[in-house]
Image (cartoon, rainbow, N blue to C red; front, side, top):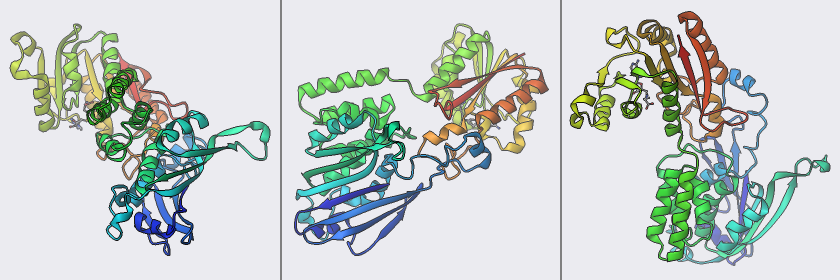
Length: 462
Ligand code: SAH
């Protein structure tokens, strides 16, 4: 991945002060998914270019041979090494964070100085085509040049690839150009899913604060950047607070409404899918094994077909939070009798857990050490032995869509493993044979054509 920033305003080598990178040296930093380097192919008083080159580990988060086999060539042959995706934006943030925040101790007077700047992006993945590039960059004062890249230069008949080569030119401060790239590269790409945390809203507002609220495409930018509707809503609301123009406020409210109609978040989808499965198997007395903070219980207790709901977890802290969430202390006598929270472990038999119609096990199995899986199966399917068991777990293959994973390529540092679709199915079939259940496996969340859904669910029935 490459991006070059060129100043043609004398003394052009001042760019080195603004970027905090000396034109005579190469600087390299580790960026998690690879290494990023900055160097200056040209540095004269008339023209100075700083090039950022990011070397990406192209095999990405898939490290296990078994998994590579399951996914064919995709882990080896993909666009990660050369396409200017959100990973480039992360690298720019890491390399030029100080410049982006407008700090230049050596030459503070330069920060607010607009310069004649050019940006060269040899390969940009572009959702929405060249038109999208112009819609996003024209309003910011850039002249945009965009050339298509052939899918394969040897076979011109195959036509153009989804990538373009782009050049932007404008009179801008270095700080603004960096902010524009930081926010807009992932927006242009739009193909990768992030592992999004609430701090993304802060990052968007920090980098886009000065220009985003007056950008005619601010809603599109926030939506694509943040992906998840609750975050989009928060960002738009906070942008609206900052803005003053009434029309702008209206368009942002519309955007917030549209955002609300986007697919609901994965956690919600998972709970909905589990509830639906519980309804389908007929509900009755339900035990939620590894109930955590009680998100599922909260819904179960208002289901007409659920006659009683018991939550079990090993963590006392989680159970306390579940109690608060359910407002056990304010619950009516009648409802209170139908709900119970128990501390217990799923790796020991416990007579309190017997006699249920349905057991749910939502995002729990991956927290158990592999050596304990057999005991867990004995306890849940042999001892608890509910008529139906609804179990969900992450699909590890889908992690190829996430950029923020832990060092092992997993979604959570307490996960001991994450199963591929094949591994989960094999495990579930084994359980069904061993304990005499029928099993049906289904997908939860948006299904990626190559990697499948983010969450997989098995419904076991006697
Ligand atoms: N089902 C909840 C929580 C998932 S997090 C939800 O979907 O929101 C996993 C939970 O499993 C944690 O609350 C953890 O305390 C619990 N857990 C992990 N290992 C366990 C074990 N061996 N016995 C009981 N609970 C366990």
